Length: 113
Length: 330
Image (cartoon, rainbow over all chains, first blue to last red; front, side, top):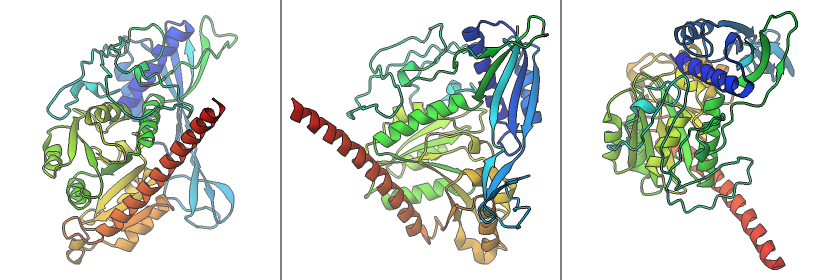
């Protein structure tokens, strides 16, 4: 449900950028969303389509670039892929993993007119 | 409710203070706030935040440029043009943004955190499912600690002021924030609530978040720590079912342990799951009803408070030393 707040946050950034950078219409928004972030991409897409109209992003396309989960394994001393938060190290099977990537929620860039 | 800042349905104590004139999606907030607090602390903003504390000035946010709430600090979302043209795309151009979607929340959270630290306020964000016993734990904690600490509480719920009423009955200052349709508190709501509540210097501030193990994980409120409460009447696998929350929390309180003899809850398995998601998470086993284990919780609070106060003392001492040096030169 917080995807709606996040979407409103995205639109807020778009409106501010429109004023700052002198564009009137956003054609495409590219987001980078980590696979372990607290956001569901499909829900975000749904919310975006629900509220984009009559804003600077009216009709805009939303592209979501997924970023994979990564963690540093304390026992192996190296970075390993982390498919979900409670996964174990694929090499040693240990659970001492520190998240090092995959929790991003970023607006990467825009295509504007 | 304004899903962005939550202002629309803010019910603070019994009194509505703010007059939010929002026009959404354009977000031309015109907050006629009157920041005329009598804060008796010295703002020595040497910590990198360019706060514009125009306290006392009724200002009007109708600027054309891109910041909001200048009175509460600089929150610039536009980081200047970084546009790059992509050849071959008719009139369209690319604009690089590279901004965190939660940037607006995190800006307010940073202000809250700076304000809490400056005033020695230990702010704890209590998160859990509904029914884990957060309010009961808080009432008991207040009853046990109120002679040692000044305590204030921000209560977040979608509706009703029942919880704030329960807290006020203990004698602590409490303030209800109703989020309306919202599923979490955000840093902007907490900033406003703190202004209203005016917690004392060197006090404890408990922020009881909306009962929800999902959304509040993503929203930093400026707290010193998130404390997740899980009751043993729930499933022991909640840490892996809702990993974001357990990953964000510094400590997990297992509540209602007086009921363990009647349940099949596997405490060790639960702790193992929580450590799988967050290897560093602290675990406190308590019963807010029987009082078992609460001393450990109070000791944890005491330790966090000590380190906060030590930081404050160090800052004040360096400020004092700088002042003395200036006096010697004069």
